[in-house]
Length: 325
Image 1 (cartoon, rainbow, N blue to C red):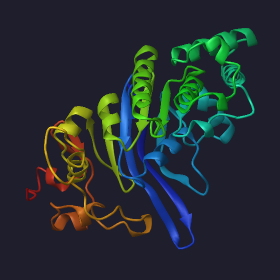
Image 2 (image 1 turned 60 degrees about the vertical axis):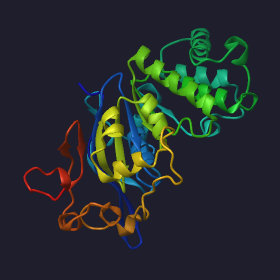
Image 3 (image 1 turned 60 degrees about the horizontal axis):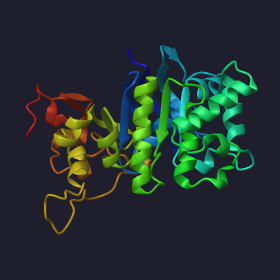
């Protein structure tokens, strides 16, 4: 059974010239112990999807329709106070910049123990013991001493480990990680990726990993959802999406990844740019940039269709329509 189910999620922003639809009919699920990668260009809706699940949508953004289910319980319609209890206890969050998640005025130990005691029935001594254990689990050396240090006394990579420890403090079932390695150098990135994978395996937690880095996706995830203009363009096992992408946008993304075994002067690029929210074209949102678009693509919006091992929102995979290939 799925731990997280997102069903037909629509997120809108009221605007003086009307309503902007930022997420348009998003559906996916994540099983316990699974890592789902969410990838796409800036503005595709990746972080907005994560914020909707965590319950941290910036006003005036709102969930207009659809639903988000966690362990069979609907969470998108909960009050701020109810969601605050679930956030931390059942859902852990890891953000791109650890300094936005840590209070510079408190030691990391105080922040960890307060989080643990807010969600678990333990006393101060037990909370501190757990906090030291979390710091050790996330690879911070001399954790018993470092627990009384302040965030500014840690390096960027170590701060991100503290944030992961904070996200794990109440033993959540789901972790939403939004670009957790972007601000780190490559060697530290690899360590954080290994840490996320180990946490997922050891604790049976589901992870939603939001990133624009296909290398991180390939190294970390079980499945991947490719997003474009607030919609899912393709979703499936990571190996299949990377090696045999079924959507022309996914093909373009994969072709843009440098291949050290092939000599070429220029990298592949996808011409054009993602449309603004107030100018999303009719039909398939990708059609103005798509080299394989045909008449139907400009008139009808495709849903996710079976495309071999994956599902792709592309009329090329409509077996009944005899679409040109």
